[in-house]
Each structure stands twice: as structure tokens, then as C-alpha cells.
Length: 348
Image 1: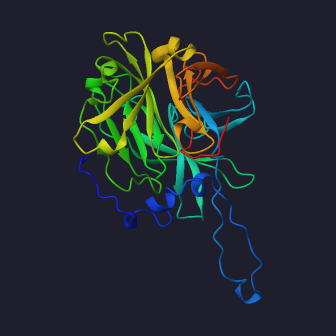
Image 2 (image 1 turned 90 degrees about the vertical axis):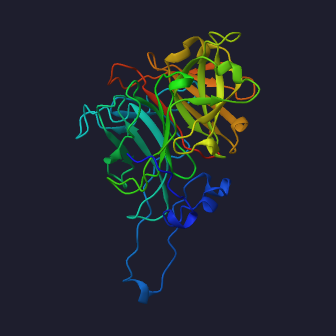
Image 3 (image 1 turned 180 degrees about the vertical axis):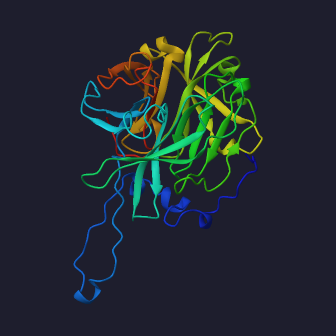
């Protein structure tokens, strides 16, 4: 894999998916199916491209092996039906959604923005990145291979995924120390195609901000998420002096990602409550908010062994139990990841 930075001006991106159009805040928050206006009779023979089917952009989703499900209600459960079930389909046994991301996509086959899932297996011997698209009315979702995972460090698998508001896919190595963590970004487009090579960071992160000492040693908890304003967050389990045994909410400074350069992570505040007790068994991380900033909503983490969901207050770091996984059971972990779209106007 080339690690050369690929230029990303607006005009090189998919039509309708420019940086300007994607950062219009609430106007971009949720997909809107185009209304069909009455057309004059002489235009009746003009082909009309159908609107893209889409999953609900405001969902809080989890995965287990080859199945994607949704948390809903208060307290949240997953018993309201499955979103994507490929446990018995052509991708059965691939565990294609062990790592899960959710975000915007512009398809050449239909009109408008749709929200899709991306997935990969927590095992670098399985090389594919997958995409799951919603089916049209009365049809099942479809899963397709988009391209290969990045060539990452041999000592760790890729263990976390998230989509930013531009539709780019970010990946992070699993349960690694600050000195051995690696991050990658790519723009997925049509099936079996990645529109650019991965932008790969150097191995290792740089700790920044007033709480940088928290990240001096410890383990990066294996998932990331984006808020609607394009900021990337995650958790770290600290073993540094003065904070050993603590879990901290961190921001990854995305503007510091360069090919071959070390990205900066900035610890923000300590997390307390049940999510902190679970520590590195938080196998997923997501965010939902009423606006686009982190403090307009809440972060969510999930216990991989039990599927218990935790809500984390961005302002205080206090976590509380918010629900649990009730079905399905398809893998050796109850929940292998969480995913949410980087949009505002949402709640669980």
C-alpha cells in the first residue's frame, strides 16, 4: 500500500459530496428523500434516477460477527429487529462487521446521500473492507466488498472504524500503546474501489494538551467516533503515574494526520462509573447529539462481553448504564463494536 498523501480538493470528490456541502451543519444532518413533482407530459419519457435507500442516520448501532443491530428505547435494547443479518447469507462466517463504521455515501446508481455501514474482521489475515447498503422497499440490505484493509502493524489488528462527515473511513489499530498505535484514512466509493490510497500515520501517537501526561503509558481502547462537527474521539486506559487505572475521554486531532507523521491525541477528562470499570473491554464507541458538537449529546460505549451499553456525559465524564443487548447472539462476543453517523439532530 502506498502511504503517499493524496490531494483532496473539493473538485476531486464525488459530485455533491464536497467539503462545503458537507459542513452546512443541520442542512446536512439527515438525508431527505426528494419529493416528486408533477412533470409535463412531454417529459414523461425522461428516465428518473430513484432516490438512494438509506439506513436511519440517527441510529445507534452495534455489531456481533456478521450481524448489525440497533439500540433503541430507554433503557435501550436490541430486540426491535436486526438491521443487517448476513449470518446465513453469502458473507456468513466472514464476521464482516466485527469492526463497524456508519456514515454518508453518494452512490452513482441513485440520487441523494445514503447512510451505509462499513466493516472489517478483527483479524489482519482477512483482508476485506465491506459496505452494507440499505435495500429498496421490500428488499434486504446488500453487503459488498469495497477494497482491502490497510497494510498495518504486524503486532496488532485493525480494531476500530468510524466515518467522518466527508464520508471518509478512518481505522485505528486495536488495543495498542501510545507508542505503537497507527491510524489510517481512505475515501471508499464504488464497489471494489477505494478512490485513493490510505493515508497512513507513522506508528505511535503524540500526546498533547494540558492532560498529556495521562497518555504517557496505557492502552488505546479499540474504537473511535466522530461528532457532527468533524472531531474524532476515543478512550484511553491509562497506566501513567498519577492516573494509573483510569479511563479518559480523548480527542484525536485529525488535522495532524499526515502520511508518515505522528498524529496527536489529547486527553480531555476522566471517565467515571461503569464504563471506567470495564476499561479495555469497552469494544465500541459512538456519539449521538441534538446539534453537531460533542456537548450537545452523549458518547456511548459497550461492554464486549455482555452487550451492556453505557452513556458518557461529555461535560463531566460520568457514565451510567443505558441499556443492554437482548439479541442476536452470533459471535464469541456479545458486541464487537458500536457505530453512529456524524450528524446532529439525533438521540437514542
